[in-house]
Image 1 (spheres, rainbow, N blue to C red):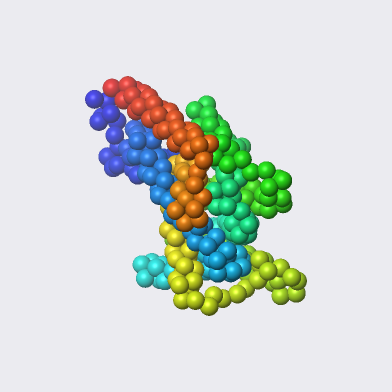
Image 2 (cartoon, rainbow, N blue to C red):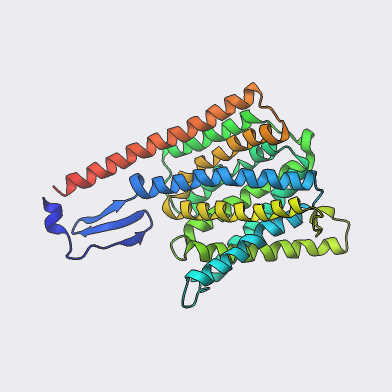
Amino acid sequence: MKLAKNLTHIPIVSNMPTGICIYSTKKGCLMVKSSSLQMQGLSAMTLAMVFLPLMDAIAKWLSVVDKLPPATITLFRFAVPTILTVLIIMLITKPRPFHSANVYGNLCRGVLLGIASLCFHVALKYMPLADATAIFFAEPLILTLLSAIALKEQVGWYRWSAVAIGFTGTLIVIQPTWSSFGWVSLLPLASAALFAAYLSLNRYYGTKDTQLIMQLYAGLGGTITVLLAMIPSAFLDLDDMAFSLPDRAISWFWLLTIGGLAMIGHLLIIQASALAPASLIAPFQYLEIVMAVFIGLLIFNDFPSISKWTGITVIVGASATLIWGEGRSSVKSKRSFENDNR
């Protein structure tokens, strides 16, 4: 076969924007992306969508039942994983364990995520979990738009269709209105826009630093952002932005758990962003609302109506459509490469 004759004497493994070049030939690279890297990215995103709704449910419980300010909950959400990340890096990385090729970029990621988390945790205090999550899911549309405009990713018709169908599903699950929630309903939407920008930066910086370094500086940026947001509460009557420690041991446990879940969830998101295009993983974030509905049922006794179950079906169908479309693209790319090198 011509492929064997054209291989260089040393296999080349290098990070590429669209995947990993396993072997270099005169006619190009044999890329491993859709069938391997991108599926790993989708798996990581799916796992993240399990952990993050659990974190949100705990945050809502602490703010409603234990009366903890959302800002305090958000502070622990960033401070705990940051401390854990520092310890892990010190144990496994030598020398220059905290070196980053993009310090300011990663801190900027943390600022975006810090403000997004603050907005969402305040919304959770006043809104049902599934309602806030449904409004938040304007984010994949924003992310796909950003990936096409800012990251110059190619977004095929099936990706646009999957995102649009998935967003329609979220509107079917819950139809929040301004009259029901007032200005609070804008907080998940603001969080969605900020989180979409955060994911876009994940994609941009994902191959330039390790996951732990990205987690560390994003955590630092988020912690600093939340601390700065808490300063006005010392002079103004802003209970949601205040700092207050819990009285019960179980509340301390849940605060620490939020930090652990945040660390695991966002490490998975960073991994997903590094392995797959932002526009590809976007529809899989709709799985988070499926989890939010089930958690709302189990913990807050919010039983889904027929419309909610219909919406869940639409969301799952959108993700299945994306897998089907990406699978066809993967097969075509593989066959094209094989035909060119016979």
